Amino acid sequence: MEQYRIRGGNRLQGALKLQGAKNSALPILAAALLPGGVSEIHNCPQLSDTRRTLDILEHLGCGVSREGDVVTVDPSGAYRWEVPAPLVRSMRSSIIFLGAMVARFGRARLTYPGGCELGPRPIDLHLCALRQMAVQVEETGGDLWCTAPQGLCGARIVLLFPSVGATENILLAAATARGVTRVTNAAREPEIVDLADYLIRRGAKISGAGEGELTVEGVPRLCGAAHRIMGDRIAAATYLAAAAATGGSLSLCGAAPGTLAAVLPVLEKAGCQIETAGQTIALRAPERLRPLGVVRTMPYPGFPTDAQAPFLALSLLARGSSVFVENIFESRYKHVAELRRMGGRVEVEGRVAVAEGLGQLHSADVAATELRGGAALVLAALAAQGESRVSGAGYIDRGYEKFEDSLLSLGAEIQRMPWDEKAE
Ligand code: UD1
View 1 (cartoon, helix red, strand yellow):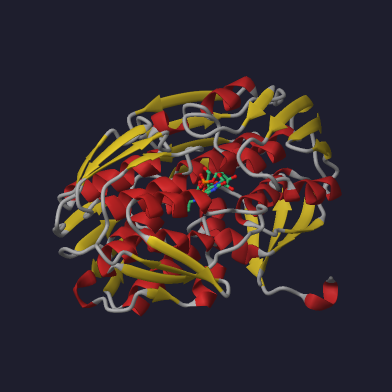
View 2: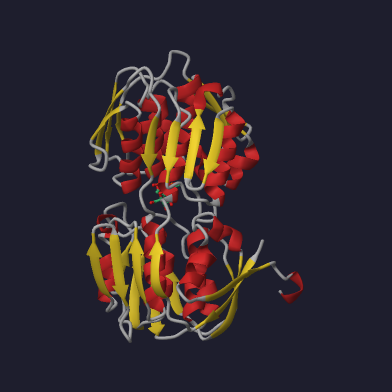
């Protein structure tokens, strides 16, 4: 895997056009498999995860093409109903194909996705919901076999936790199921609203997306449609935090400020000036960052777990203590050990991390082991004095489009290089 060489200390300054949202693109591309016409997906980010999702669609027999940020998916020729194990293992979110394949073929086979770098990631809520929709699920030899011999049926589903992935799988399964599906405690993330908007354009009957109570009235078949993917609020949070960490200023266009309602006040608490107008967010960092207070990750509209790592890195550039409480994933502080190598003082106990910001970090060679933690290390290296190397660039490619080009355009000194094994 490649690495980044970063000479820190430059203020990030300038304007950036935000990429399309990874977490919208993945379920929307999976939904393009549903029976009906051709989907034209605009603002589809060029990421390794979207590439893998397109590989899955091609493997299933869909016609797929990409021109710039526009992806076209023709599902008419799809004939396979299993996703190869290496693809499932390389991208846990391929679980989203379960709902799409059962809806399309009445059956699906997938390797059990298992845990990931964020800790155990069960799929019990997905499977329980599908069972309620008349899907028979068998788990044998590490594989999941799903069949719906009588077709999918609408159901009344209460989610014990507002899981994003489970809500998406239900939407995909319910869109063309027989009857009405009602979901209580559905996830309210903006990406759910984006997926519902896309399905509605294709003729699905969905109401309540983003409100926690979802109703889907199944239709026999969808039609083709064009859809533009929303801006990536997590990439937005990362770039804003990077500008803040380096004492810079950034104008981000293509970001809906409403989707960052829990994030922007944290930046303001740190002393940043934020102005929003339409789809543009402008940030100006203070000369001295203030601590961030208590940041609790929560399901939307709370503070996103995916922004925790970059904000923890940011908190180390402030003087004083900030507290993080990770309520979504069990094991989401792997970046902390690497931040300590850069002089960060962070104590972790269970779900709580206390960051004792010293107002500075020093350069070091550190290792990214997952996407958002990796972005946090790059952010820390951009703010630290001296030259750092961040290995594991491939993890960052999963979620940030043209990451180094974007940072270079803002004045960062960052270079992508092959991993030098001898230097480790
Ligand atoms: C999605 C996002 C991910 C984000 C997460 C939370 C995508 C591709 N990924 O992941 O970036 O961090 O939402 O906002 O959109 N859980 C169960 N049983 C289940 C499903 C989930 O216990 O069947 C638990 C998980 O272990 C986790 C929590 O619920 O602790 C949240 O998971 P979920 O909302 O499902 O996240 P993902 O859809 O996997």
